Length: 90
Image (tube, rainbow, N blue to C red; front, side):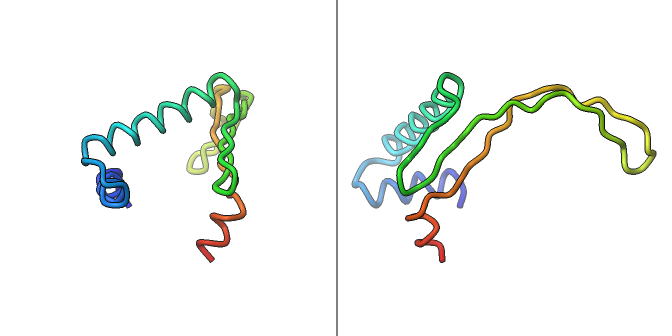
């Protein structure tokens, strides 16, 4: 499902306009991003948990040449599925 399809679904389900639904979705994504930056975790009970984890710098190897490649330290985002979402999908 694309963002446009999700906005259309939200508009149909809530009775909002597509523009209002798009703003609501953008606000949700901005809130999750801000939560990950400031609190490192966003939990939506039953749906899942977004978490930000620090990955340290490391040296890897290029599989084609075998040459060492330095990978910089970075933050990575993970998502752990909640129980209600897991049940709904299965």
